Length: 191
Image 1 (spheres, rainbow, N blue to C red):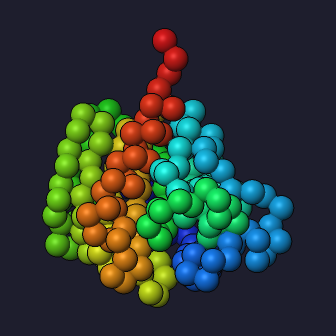
Image 2 (image 1 turned 60 degrees about the vertical axis):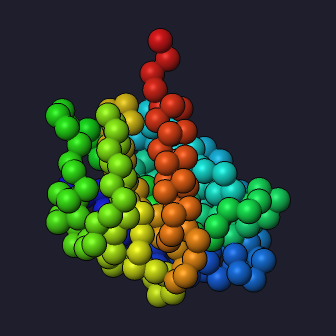
């Protein structure tokens, strides 16, 4: 399964985004980026990725099967950030296979995660908290992970936050669940 792969530029992007959130300057604003952040984006296989409250999709990271989501003020949209916790979310897609989704323990074993806790399993999703590698310094090794079936695709989601940040604690599950619920609903075929 390749749903947990980190892209090289993610480390630099994450550092800039988290620093910008602290300093009140947006990534898009400081870099003069022409592409504004998005609240939703179409991805491979008809998946519609919908950002959680206060978060935006970095349009410069968007590929058919990969996206970076961060707090909106870190992407140049300060009015949209609200009280969202500082954090960085990666989403990657792979074509769905029939059968059950992997368990939290299977995902952890495959991706070198440890100390799995707070496991929640639904019909089309699995979420949990674990400790693992971080894509950039300054982030907590405590992270939320999720796998969700969205139409013909399976999304692998990782939610990272700064050391001692809210998103690495209990609020991270809410951010992860909101992204999953909204994206699954937006990606459902119209009857």
